Length: 248
Image (cartoon, rainbow, N blue to C red; front, side):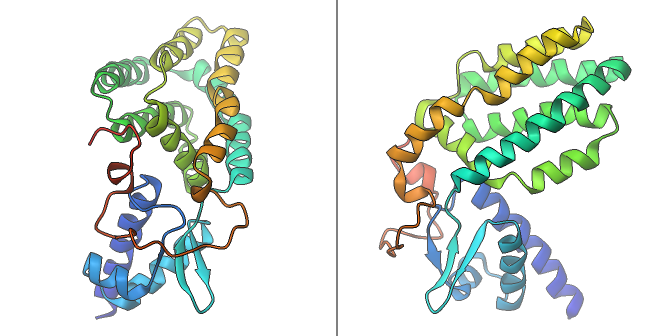
């Protein structure tokens, strides 16, 4: 029986984490363990254990005597998570530049082709997933996959900010070209050009983020008293249900 519970815990953890990061569950939404258990058809013990794990990642907030909340996007954490990635990624790409091989370059080119297709479909979730895979190729190629795993486990607020930005304004024009410029700089072994392209690429959203905080204040952690909204529902996709420009 214990093994079954562990399997359920792993499964519900993965599903809930994915739904939080994909903004299927609204930041700030309040629910109970019973709500999750019934909606996802999982026992309460695995749900409770999964929520504890998610709270350690800052994705779940326990509210004494009020229930559990999908953590709002913390703008300070967004900035810190991006800073961490910026510091690590340039060094990873420089190492990749020194050891890249045909297999890795082919994987990058195939990813770029998929990005161009997804850009046309405007499927922001699929595009963001492909974007993250594209960057992971550099980590794997430089034998730094462990670093990528650590960053992925500690970038939930940054990832949700990126998705919210895409949902609000669509996939940024020129984003795929920025990725191609990164590959071109690496193939040319031009570290100075790589630095310039990567710095712009990772920090381009800074000026766009504060307007999002102002435009969607209920989604951000601004020390407001949370009020339970009647429209909250675990069976509803937040991005699809709102007026954001997401195409299901």
